[in-house]
Image (cartoon, one colour):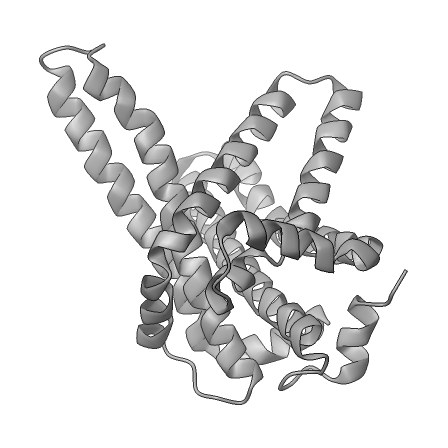
Amino acid sequence: MLQTSGRILRSRRELLAFPILAGAVSIVVVIGLTSLAGLLAVYDAFSAPVLVLVPVGYFAVAYVTVFFNAALVSQADVALRGGDPSVAAGVGAAAQKWARLVPWAITAATVSGVLRMLRDRASVLQDLLVGAVGVAWDAVTFLVLPKLVFENSDFAGTVRSAASELRDTWGENVIGTVSLGTIRFVLAVPGLVMIWLGGYVGGTAEGIAFISGAVWLVGSTILVAALNGIYQAALYRFIKDGRAAGAFGATDLQAAFVAG
């Protein structure tokens, strides 16, 4: 299934533009808010506006990520149906749903932040437990974004519907979620190794190794984000329409959604 996602991505490389845009716009948001915080701190380092900018920045970046992920899912669906995806069409599709994306961005960012704080303070066993909770959350909410893009129900109804539709395919969806996480980890290893080795060689080679490792990590993150969007769109269409879409064969999709 993920191999098929890769084939679609190779033939429709414009889909990579969405995670790239998400990263670029997020950087602009962070720089802008950091600059504003710096100006305010000149007058009072602990003023309310400065302190408020931290959560505002966190949720703003979360919204930017969700927005461009929604754009990606919309155009992945176009590609799966044999159409011609475009960046402009994706941004337009996400813009039409901008208000519906707000509660999901807030919810996803809050859950992610809480899980991250718990893991930072957890023992090894607790860390594994929190990780399992994170996987379960990702599995249950995997179809929330496609539903927000393609349907018009309210946010609470969307979440309930996504969880309900995956009730009989829990195990299979967890496997898919874990597989994407594993791919993310495996692809990140070479970049981490480059950075680690750079710390030992020193000199000019250290800088080259660090830059190369950082570029590799960014590239792998973009790749996995695009694969994830294609996978979400494909699974949504299979559940909703009861048929395979585009380059996904029926066998591929049925293997991901076998009734338990």
